[in-house]
Image 1: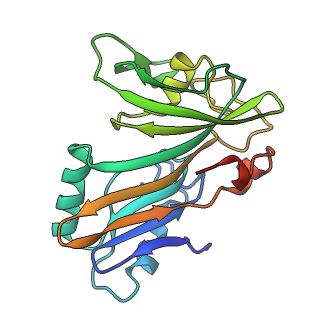
Image 2: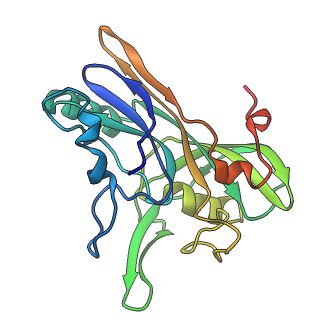
Length: 223
């Protein structure tokens, strides 16, 4: 079993670099999940750490885990109050002319027997705000930095499709999907949470190999 890289750790928190393709919860059909690694991630503590938030199975990068119930409650409240700074990197399946902006599109969930469930842009949905900045374009693809202000399900994926005019590369739900992309190209790059009386939790996940294989590198990330 592959070891999960640890980006930050102290007595109440862990931030791991979750690999793309690893679900946080056990799939109904069975198979590998983050649950297989929780015992290993105890690292001498009595309790297994608990994920504070969710990122998609395909999404790699920063995932915060709490080591005890008090920390879990406090961190969850910080996410709810939008006090967590999150930075994502995504590869769009096309090129864009603009350099930066903010997308404000409310989101709602729909489902059908044929396609299952998905999120859509809907005026009567829940408010969703994403700030974005173009980092680089290469081979018809665009590397974009996303800073979501809200944390709706599939927010960046839908905002990329509707707000920027291109789905994330490899996205099988909101885009065309492609055999050339091993997964939806979205990476949770950085996570920062301020704490009262303590240094903030701060972690940065390195650029994954799947992004590098598309020609993007650390030099594209800038300051």
